[in-house]
Length: 192
Image (cartoon, rainbow, N blue to C red; front, top):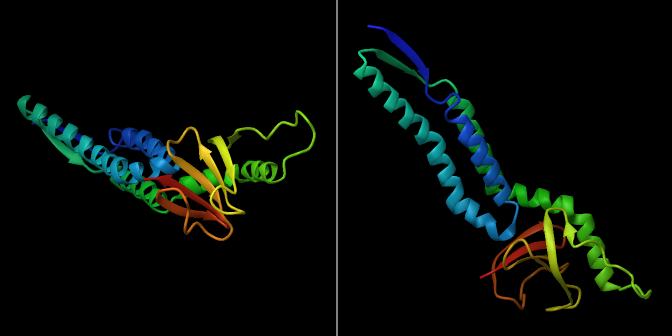
Protein backbone atom coordinates (compact mmCIF):
# COMPACT_ATOMS: atom_id res chain seq x y z
CA UNK A 1 0.00 0.00 0.00
CA UNK A 2 1.42 3.37 -1.04
CA UNK A 3 1.86 5.97 1.68
CA UNK A 4 1.38 9.69 1.24
CA UNK A 5 2.20 12.34 3.78
CA UNK A 6 0.34 15.60 3.98
CA UNK A 7 0.82 18.51 6.33
CA UNK A 8 -2.65 19.58 7.44
CA UNK A 9 -2.06 23.19 8.39
CA UNK A 10 0.89 24.07 6.20
CA UNK A 11 -0.24 26.24 3.31
CA UNK A 12 -3.96 25.50 3.46
CA UNK A 13 -4.53 27.15 6.84
CA UNK A 14 -1.91 29.88 6.68
CA UNK A 15 -3.25 31.65 3.60
CA UNK A 16 -6.82 32.25 4.86
CA UNK A 17 -5.49 33.00 8.35
CA UNK A 18 -3.17 35.66 6.98
CA UNK A 19 -5.84 37.26 4.80
CA UNK A 20 -8.58 37.17 7.43
CA UNK A 21 -6.14 38.27 10.13
CA UNK A 22 -5.27 41.37 8.11
CA UNK A 23 -8.96 42.11 7.59
CA UNK A 24 -9.64 41.74 11.33
CA UNK A 25 -6.79 44.11 12.20
CA UNK A 26 -8.13 46.69 9.72
CA UNK A 27 -11.69 46.46 11.12
CA UNK A 28 -10.39 46.78 14.67
CA UNK A 29 -8.78 50.12 13.78
CA UNK A 30 -12.13 51.94 13.69
CA UNK A 31 -14.31 52.61 16.76
CA UNK A 32 -17.65 51.37 15.42
CA UNK A 33 -16.14 48.25 13.85
CA UNK A 34 -13.97 47.35 16.86
CA UNK A 35 -16.64 45.33 18.63
CA UNK A 36 -17.82 43.82 15.37
CA UNK A 37 -14.27 42.60 14.82
CA UNK A 38 -14.02 41.31 18.36
CA UNK A 39 -17.40 39.58 18.60
CA UNK A 40 -17.91 38.25 15.08
CA UNK A 41 -14.78 38.28 12.98
CA UNK A 42 -12.22 36.93 15.47
CA UNK A 43 -14.24 33.75 16.20
CA UNK A 44 -14.81 33.36 12.45
CA UNK A 45 -11.08 33.74 11.86
CA UNK A 46 -10.33 30.96 14.33
CA UNK A 47 -13.05 28.69 12.95
CA UNK A 48 -12.15 29.13 9.28
CA UNK A 49 -8.41 28.92 9.83
CA UNK A 50 -8.53 25.81 12.00
CA UNK A 51 -11.51 23.93 10.63
CA UNK A 52 -10.92 24.47 6.90
CA UNK A 53 -7.54 22.66 6.86
CA UNK A 54 -8.94 19.80 8.95
CA UNK A 55 -11.96 19.43 6.64
CA UNK A 56 -9.74 19.47 3.55
CA UNK A 57 -7.40 16.92 5.12
CA UNK A 58 -10.31 14.61 5.97
CA UNK A 59 -11.57 14.83 2.39
CA UNK A 60 -8.10 13.94 1.12
CA UNK A 61 -7.94 10.97 3.51
CA UNK A 62 -11.29 9.74 2.21
CA UNK A 63 -10.18 10.17 -1.40
CA UNK A 64 -6.91 8.34 -0.71
CA UNK A 65 -8.76 5.41 0.88
CA UNK A 66 -11.02 5.16 -2.16
CA UNK A 67 -7.91 4.89 -4.34
CA UNK A 68 -6.46 2.22 -2.05
CA UNK A 69 -3.71 4.41 -0.63
CA UNK A 70 -2.80 5.19 2.92
CA UNK A 71 -2.55 8.85 3.81
CA UNK A 72 -0.58 9.95 6.85
CA UNK A 73 -1.53 13.29 8.29
CA UNK A 74 1.03 15.55 9.89
CA UNK A 75 0.34 18.74 11.78
CA UNK A 76 3.31 20.79 10.53
CA UNK A 77 2.55 24.48 10.51
CA UNK A 78 0.00 24.25 13.32
CA UNK A 79 2.15 26.18 15.80
CA UNK A 80 2.72 28.98 13.32
CA UNK A 81 -1.00 29.15 12.54
CA UNK A 82 -2.10 29.13 16.18
CA UNK A 83 0.62 31.67 17.01
CA UNK A 84 -0.65 34.03 14.30
CA UNK A 85 -4.26 33.62 15.42
CA UNK A 86 -3.25 34.21 19.03
CA UNK A 87 -1.33 37.36 18.08
CA UNK A 88 -4.27 38.78 16.10
CA UNK A 89 -6.64 37.98 18.97
CA UNK A 90 -4.41 39.69 21.55
CA UNK A 91 -3.92 42.77 19.36
CA UNK A 92 -7.68 43.14 18.90
CA UNK A 93 -8.40 42.43 22.58
CA UNK A 94 -6.13 45.28 23.69
CA UNK A 95 -7.27 47.66 20.93
CA UNK A 96 -3.80 47.91 19.39
CA UNK A 97 -4.98 48.64 15.81
CA UNK A 98 -7.22 51.51 16.97
CA UNK A 99 -4.47 52.92 19.19
CA UNK A 100 -1.92 52.67 16.39
CA UNK A 101 -4.21 54.44 13.91
CA UNK A 102 -4.84 57.15 16.49
CA UNK A 103 -1.12 57.56 17.18
CA UNK A 104 -0.52 58.09 13.46
CA UNK A 105 -3.41 60.60 13.23
CA UNK A 106 -2.82 62.44 16.49
CA UNK A 107 -0.79 65.37 15.10
CA UNK A 108 -3.40 66.04 12.42
CA UNK A 109 -6.22 65.86 14.98
CA UNK A 110 -4.35 68.25 17.28
CA UNK A 111 -3.97 70.69 14.36
CA UNK A 112 -7.72 70.52 13.65
CA UNK A 113 -8.52 71.00 17.33
CA UNK A 114 -6.26 74.05 17.52
CA UNK A 115 -7.80 75.45 14.34
CA UNK A 116 -11.36 75.14 15.70
CA UNK A 117 -10.44 76.37 19.18
CA UNK A 118 -8.87 79.58 17.82
CA UNK A 119 -9.95 80.11 14.18
CA UNK A 120 -7.58 82.22 12.07
CA UNK A 121 -8.63 85.81 11.36
CA UNK A 122 -7.47 85.83 7.74
CA UNK A 123 -10.27 85.47 5.19
CA UNK A 124 -10.00 82.32 3.14
CA UNK A 125 -7.78 80.56 5.68
CA UNK A 126 -8.14 76.87 5.03
CA UNK A 127 -8.70 74.41 7.85
CA UNK A 128 -6.38 71.43 8.06
CA UNK A 129 -7.13 68.40 5.92
CA UNK A 130 -10.23 66.39 6.74
CA UNK A 131 -8.09 63.26 6.63
CA UNK A 132 -6.37 62.42 9.88
CA UNK A 133 -4.43 59.26 9.21
CA UNK A 134 -6.99 56.63 8.20
CA UNK A 135 -9.81 58.61 9.84
CA UNK A 136 -11.91 60.97 7.70
CA UNK A 137 -13.29 63.70 9.94
CA UNK A 138 -16.81 64.61 8.81
CA UNK A 139 -17.35 67.48 11.24
CA UNK A 140 -15.79 68.95 14.35
CA UNK A 141 -17.88 70.14 17.30
CA UNK A 142 -15.78 72.19 19.73
CA UNK A 143 -17.38 72.86 23.13
CA UNK A 144 -20.59 71.04 22.15
CA UNK A 145 -21.27 69.34 25.48
CA UNK A 146 -18.71 70.98 27.71
CA UNK A 147 -16.16 73.76 27.36
CA UNK A 148 -12.81 72.27 26.44
CA UNK A 149 -14.36 69.14 24.95
CA UNK A 150 -14.13 68.61 21.18
CA UNK A 151 -15.86 65.88 19.19
CA UNK A 152 -14.43 64.74 15.86
CA UNK A 153 -17.23 62.87 14.06
CA UNK A 154 -15.86 60.29 11.65
CA UNK A 155 -17.35 60.02 8.18
CA UNK A 156 -15.88 56.64 7.29
CA UNK A 157 -17.07 55.14 10.57
CA UNK A 158 -20.81 55.39 11.20
CA UNK A 159 -21.96 57.05 14.45
CA UNK A 160 -18.53 57.21 16.02
CA UNK A 161 -16.22 59.97 17.08
CA UNK A 162 -12.85 60.71 18.53
CA UNK A 163 -13.26 62.96 21.56
CA UNK A 164 -10.76 65.34 23.09
CA UNK A 165 -11.84 65.80 26.70
CA UNK A 166 -9.07 66.61 29.19
CA UNK A 167 -11.49 66.18 32.13
CA UNK A 168 -12.84 62.85 30.88
CA UNK A 169 -16.00 61.89 29.05
CA UNK A 170 -18.33 61.26 31.98
CA UNK A 171 -21.58 63.09 31.37
CA UNK A 172 -21.15 63.21 27.61
CA UNK A 173 -24.31 64.76 26.14
CA UNK A 174 -24.52 62.14 23.37
CA UNK A 175 -25.96 58.69 23.86
CA UNK A 176 -22.63 56.98 24.06
CA UNK A 177 -22.76 53.29 23.51
CA UNK A 178 -19.18 52.23 23.94
CA UNK A 179 -16.20 54.34 24.90
CA UNK A 180 -12.54 53.88 25.53
CA UNK A 181 -9.46 55.89 26.33
CA UNK A 182 -6.81 56.32 23.68
CA UNK A 183 -4.09 58.61 24.99
CA UNK A 184 -4.00 61.48 27.46
CA UNK A 185 -7.25 63.41 27.08
CA UNK A 186 -8.27 61.55 23.91
CA UNK A 187 -11.11 59.01 23.83
CA UNK A 188 -13.14 57.12 21.26
CA UNK A 189 -16.89 56.64 21.39
CA UNK A 190 -19.70 55.12 19.39
CA UNK A 191 -23.35 56.06 19.70
CA UNK A 192 -25.68 53.37 20.95
